[in-house]
Length: 368
Ligand SMILES: *Cc1c(COP(=O)(O)O)cnc(C)c1O
Image 1 (cartoon, rainbow, N blue to C red):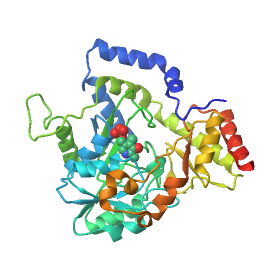
Image 2 (cartoon, rainbow, N blue to C red; image 1 turned 90 degrees about the vertical axis):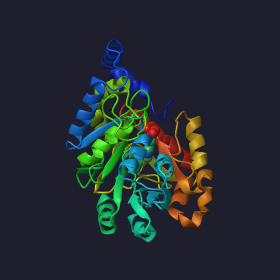
Image 3 (cartoon, helix red, strand yellow; image 1 turned 180 degrees about the vertical axis):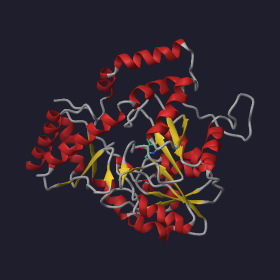
Image 4 (cartoon, rainbow, N blue to C red; image 1 turned 90 degrees about the horizontal axis):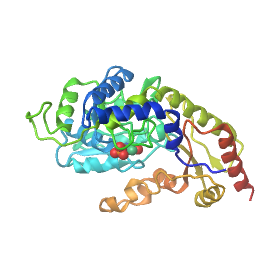
């Protein structure tokens, strides 16, 4: 058997007619930048999220940058981010003039360890960016309490967490602003780059709308200096088709994860993702721990199963952050994490037989 890590072609085939029609309409109407499709997407995404304001932008990294600017980040301001996430979460803080302060992750949820946050707060701290990593919710109850007590803002990085809930409430609706990515491989993926910010605060929404479009909402108007970060018409058209299926596809991912948990339960040598009663994960990734991770990855690859390491180096240990002078003892959980994690294929189209095959290969590996 050959099993890809992500198989975007299978999904395309299942909705080919709708996608092809939507894309050719954009071309016919030459609605390349913004236009009706973009407005429709913002409205529909907003409806999905309790009518929060949705402002589209060019990608999920810009979304974080735009959110930081809207919250008024100033040079030297400190922002607390988890030690293990995709680099967008931290590089945008630096881009916006802030100072990155890493916080270790929790050994069960793999999201920011809320026990460690308050110890990192100084008189320069302005905010926290929890990341709902792998689709798993960060503890938004503790984070909201900490933010309130210390007068900090919260940006939720929801790039991997479309439709994830924490205590039956959608993540993205807890913080001041939430950011989403629609990178093709994300749970809701465009056919190129796209992203958005979400907020319940109309003032912040209006600022972000302007900021993402050269500082004005109409041609010729520039209230402030902004940036060029727009969603294009073709991406919005694709997302409008796919948004209708998001709930169904998320449920299918949840079934895939449930099947993995069942099939892998009898292999004591691997650690499975922890299931918390507070979280209903979007299962962007299904991440297992193995003491022999690299060997297991190679074995699975030889048996036709593609796996990925998300991510091989936790942020504080990257060359890009050498200037902070951190070592493994500063973030013991993130350090163990980077050495053991392995992401197995997970997507709605993954068949039971394929999951069983992957599980049987992992079982065989441990028999050697
Ligand atoms: C994908 C991702 C982003 C950035 O999204 P892009 O659209 O690729 O810019 C930000 N944060 C996390 C956690 C991500 O996984």
